[in-house]
Amino acid sequence: MLIAAALAIGKLEWQQQADVGLAPTGKRHRVDYVAWKPGEPDRKVLVSCKVQNTSGTAEEKLPFEIIKLLYTMQQHPEYVKAYLIMGGTGFDARMVQFVRNGLKDFIRSAEAVTILNTDELITKGITVPPDDPSAAVPSPP
Image (cartoon, rainbow, N blue to C red):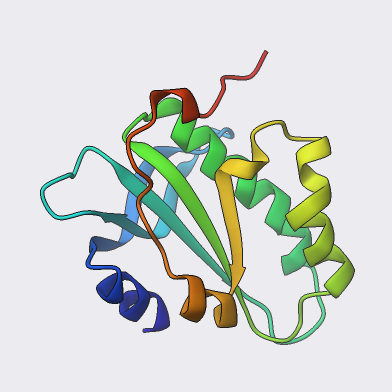
């Protein structure tokens, strides 16, 4: 509900539970939302939501979720940005800090995925960036 409200505030259209192709493993990749500006369905953003209310292994899955989002953007140029929205109180602060700041040392294009918690989502929202061909997600070497 919170994501749909943020998309509506951003005046974006969206599809929920969207199949966006294959993950790097060859399995189907489904994201929580795909959003676009009205009249611009060829420039879309991916939105993946992860919730963890108790400590556990979900936080360890965050890097692979980012890899799946980046892979989808590499395979399908219409996806120009991705968001990973984290909700709940169970995420370890050190893991969140690593995913936000340290992951780019291991995954070159990790900055193409904006990571927000639900409070940040409310204040920053979700946007489709302006068309910038130089901002495309680089292909792996």
